[in-house]
Image (tube, rainbow, N blue to C red; front, side):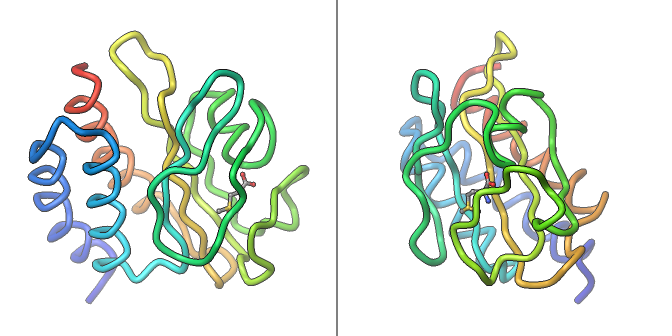
Length: 154
Ligand code: SME
């Protein structure tokens, strides 16, 4: 199945999971599991904004770093810029934080609340170079907007 078709099937599931509970951890955990199952990502998870750093939240994959400071790594930079970052080769990204030496490319999508503040970021890693493109960006942004709207009432 093509990436596009997989996302078409996944989007309604993510929407129903996002509306399934008001509990942030439960919703993020289930969305994460759905993403992993549908797309077979190497690592997928959320980091949540806590003060001036990101803290590890629900994820699927191998052990990851607990904390990421504002503006650091791909996740902290996506938070600072309030925009999705697609990184085709993590070794080319200055300050990339390597949680796994197997990770080669990455996409990070920020989740914003109703005031436009970043509340969390979705981080997805791949073992392949250049695995993420505009299709991923568009679908993931749309799904994360749905999740954020439910959790933080945009
Ligand atoms: N690579 C990320 C750190 C998180 S791990 O990939 C799970 C970054 O540079 O922010």
